[in-house]
Length: 100
Ligand code: FES
Image (cartoon, rainbow, N blue to C red; front, side):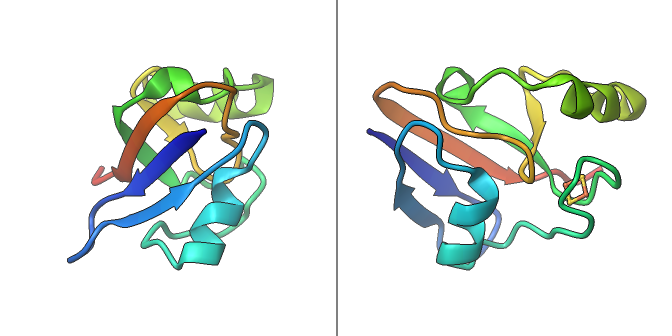
């Protein structure tokens, strides 16, 4: 079971996750600091940096890839929290809101 750590606030927020869980739901449930607007891969507000454990996320689908490309982001290091889902596996996924 992956453990997700949301950094970028005074105290990191942590959550156990299962394969298929959406990061957006974990953010809402745990009140993580990640900001959202469209929630549909259109605005880029929810871009997050992957600090550790990128392999614990399912690969991005076309809509997410297209927006990341517009921002010039490497999908191995940056994702959209409104689109990313957990993959099966063990380990720790550490993320924080992107600064640029
Ligand atoms: S909230 Fe707009 S792209 Fe994720």
